[in-house]
Every structure is written in structure tokens, then in C-alpha cells.
Image 1 (cartoon, each protein chain N blue to C red):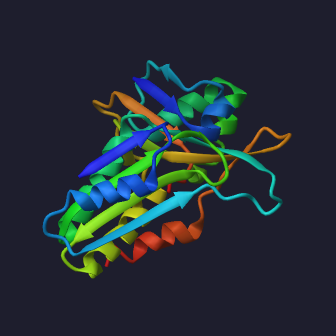
Image 2 (image 1 turned 120 degrees about the vertical axis):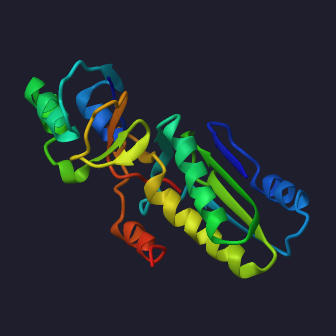
Image 3 (image 1 turned 60 degrees about the vertical axis):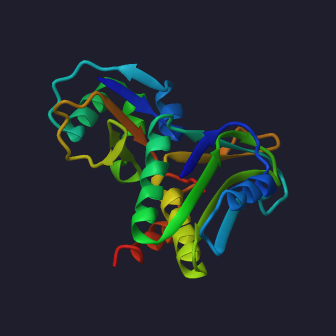
Length: 81
Length: 150
């Protein structure tokens, strides 16, 4: 699946998107896999309460299943307007 | 319904006039525009707005559709910029049109409350001599959504 990062999550991880091969069943499991990769991922995902997640461009939550999902995006709370 | 996400500057007055000019049955138009304001020290060099192409358009259209389902609106306009903007530049606008003012006012507030916290935009303030700081989401903005859930 494609994993996208925005705002300070993108800056902390150092890239805007990447292709991830995973068998993670939920967003939380994907986060755990990413955190285990490198310190920059661990830093970005240190406080999940400071993050939001979208699955296939719809806001979702961290216990949501990833079954059939093609695009996962992580970002801080939005500040539009 | 007209939803636009653009890096280009737009003319608020011309857009408001164009919106009003296309109406047939409305007696009330409410417009709101958001403008880049300077920080307390007067050192803001620019505001940078990042967004999530694809999701942004969908989220804005979804919010506008909700507004149309909830109030009797003849038309809705949302324009939101991304990229770099200087103090005084218009970031975004909404316009709503209805037969009577109450629907137009309420729908405009609803659109603003939702697009502040539910449309995927992120603001960064860049001051002279610094790399920039992401604007934190404010709790009052999240709380503002609560009143529409009743």
C-alpha cells in the first residue's frame, strides 16, 4: 500500500510518501511496524494522540482494519480556514 | 456547488460578485474570507499551506453537501488556497446563498467550522530568520464542531 505523510510528520520522517509491503491487519499494527524501523519513525509516531489517519482519503481511526485499503495517510490535526 | 483548491491568488470581490450574479431565487448571500494575519511580533514573512491533493477536494465537497442537506441553499462556493502567502493575502472564502438570511448565515458558519478541522490543510508560519513553525490545531475549533452534532 501507499503510505503518505503530511506537515511535521512528513518532515520528521523525511519523505512525503512511500510504498510499504505489510501484513498489518489494523492501522495500529502498521504504526508498530513503522516505529520499529528507525528512530525517525519512532519519533514521528511517539504520540498517537497528536496524529490523525486517513484510509483511502477518508478520516478514520487507529483501530480500523486495513483490509482492502490502498492508501494510508498520517498527519497532525488539520488547520484549514 | 463550486469547490476550488488552488495555489493561485483569487479576487474575493470578483468571486463574491460572480456568485451573487448567478443566483435566481436567493434573497440572502453570506460571504466569509480568511486572510493571512501577522504574528504578535510583526515578523511573519509568509504562511505556507500544505494539503492532501485528492482528499482535500473530496472533504470540501462532502462538507458542502452536508450543508446543502441541512439548510435550504441555492448555491455554495468554497475556494481554498495552498502554497505560500504573505500577510494580507486571502487564504480562502466561502459563500452561501438562500432565500432568507438565517440559512445562509448558519450554513457559512457550519462550513467554516468543519473545514477548519476536517479538511486536510496544514498551516506553517515562517518568520524572518527562522525555518517556520506548524500552527497547532486549537481546541476551541474542535469544540466548535460539537454544536452541529445536536
